Image (cartoon, rainbow, N blue to C red; front, side, top):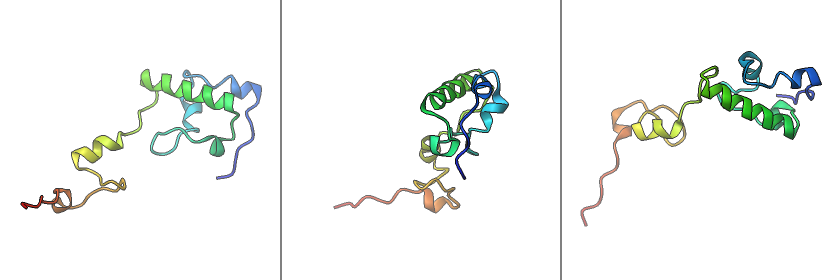
Length: 98
């Protein structure tokens, strides 16, 4: 994905939690915030974006990303993040009796 142009002053003013549609263009499919390399924002604008997204999540305007660690503990995904298919893959290996 090529880097975007820096935001104009008018667009920078839209970096608030009140505009979830605008914020959603800076989120990945899994709900995480895109990096500065991908967004093309300045350091200050990226910090404002992160703050606005976090507030919007707390107000339930934007969904939280899924907690991958919790899914691993439940046995729904493997350590590589892929879904497990069979019950045999979820079982822990047996300990040696020696």
